[in-house]
Length: 571
Ligand code: FAD
Image (cartoon, rainbow, N blue to C red; front, side, top):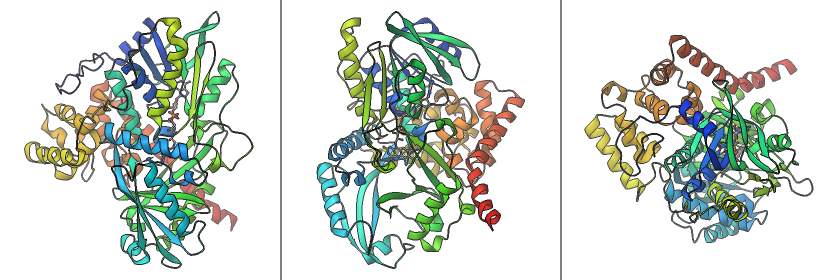
């Protein structure tokens, strides 16, 4: 609570927490029960659980929170319908249960949505098989749980829902329910919850090597990747939650590899091009891709190919782009989408755990695994965004059973399934969102659409966000004309959400980089000025942040040039 002057369930606006330097200094002074390396969803969930159980916890992340795989997923919180085909019933049941838990504890970040699954003559899976699969899915979710059961749709109903679907061979389809989530903000809010419960979490701090005291781990040497300073943090137990980087850390420590990573990409197109009104499942050779609307954009993915290079260098290539575009054009022929139409995209690496034999990438298990070394070094990998809470619970049960007696820990039971994630302490989210947005629009003069977005994005935290604009009503204006994001959000991101670069704000605190057709360029200078006011950037630093952001966008869309150039060169 002291960290940011937060107090649970009340909203006094106090921004006088320790600075980042003070937090780094704390790393150097204390010996923590648990040090977590990696600030993706897995590390974040472990930090929250451990803090709630009463352990002293530190978490370090070498870049921004969620900058790895946890902001590069399909952004679905789901049971994984396709895993039923591989008879991974336990995994699907667990994922569906966790879907329900996340809906309850983070209703502002996880949203139920209808999914439309078209069925074509001669398709890979027949109607009957899909019907049976969806019935099992509903049953495993407890008869559709609280979000609804599937329905069978005729060809006409499918076309009415999604008019630009390829009509030839279309037999009909299904509508079922799953959830979409803001993966980066879910990670960030999980970190913030951990902080509120006493954890010390710092982004842009990299673990450089393990420290030992005799047979046991005693901590980690680290480097501040922004300031360059080095130091060491003491810990009784160290958890490697570095996702696709897990083997790099394991090699550093001298233990064998455990991963079988695969790469997946998503492309962002104009929503109007697909005429998309809901999420559409694109069946493709036994796999399922998703087309997901997001504002005026839609993203489509994903691919699944083995990837063993540097996870930090993963990028979309021409072959990835053409696989996704072919799938889009097969289902939405009028889109005639080419690489030149792609607005943005992202590539991520699944930190899957190696299994026996050499299965197809899409058949590698999505289960997670915990590997414990007798010296107090634990690794956890695999799993899904959806199952992050259960993964953390299993890891901590194991750590506490194994290490608790040695250190005399008196821990509380796991409470993460009942404890809301920061901003999510809300019963009946839809009703809350409507009334809060009306209050904002009526009382504070925020445009209705912006008010709805604020409440949906920040949940109850929108109150603290508004506090940032108490003395300056101009902060309620958009970053630039027509931009959905308000100026106050840049201030809030720097003050309260640990954003340290302009890209942190544009890509992960908001999603302007991915889903705004202009990547929010019009508002980039303004955002840099506002963040700079909080973070002490001079004029040169503000300009540097804007150029770094432009370079990041250019890297993100480099594959477009590559793909557009390739056929010409061949010809
Ligand atoms: P990461 O998020 O990669 O976190 C690891 C972190 O460790 C990184 O931020 C990295 O910077 C940091 N790190 C590495 N080395 C160090 C070091 N030395 N010091 C400090 N920090 C370090 N799951 C779902 O539930 N639903 C989906 O729809 C879904 N879709 C997916 C689609 C794709 C294409 C992919 C790739 C994955 C998808 N997943 C999905 C799976 C899910 O995204 C991952 O399982 C999850 O994000 C992994 O999180 P993580 O924390 O283990 O790894």
